[in-house]
Length: 176
Image: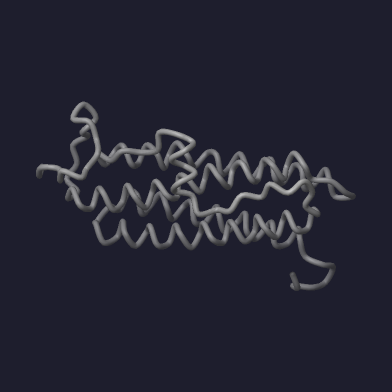
């Protein structure tokens, strides 16, 4: 195992051995931590909309968003543990999540249900694209385990996007 670079901010007590190069660990950890921050942000936004959905499709949308928020939250532990398995440091606070996340908050008092679904659809598309970029980082480093995990998460994210798209469509139209 090669020596970690000085900028690798991990306590020697947590220095997990890996055959990945120290620079690769840093790049992969950075990419996965952004995905982790986005997962927490998307989870909370999905829960926000779940709690504040209204209208004639309330029950269906409420259940859909609850199911989706559970699926998003389920990714957080796997992403964080993957960072640790390769010897990286992961998120430690809400403040760190706020600094790293790329998902925009929605603090509006009221958002029409269809706009909620479309916003979450766009956010999920954004996350899938970010996962593909992180996959490239993993591929370049030879980290097949992280890449494999991301492949599953990309598929799950695309499924959420599809369901949100279908639920938000106007009758007989693909228009937004």
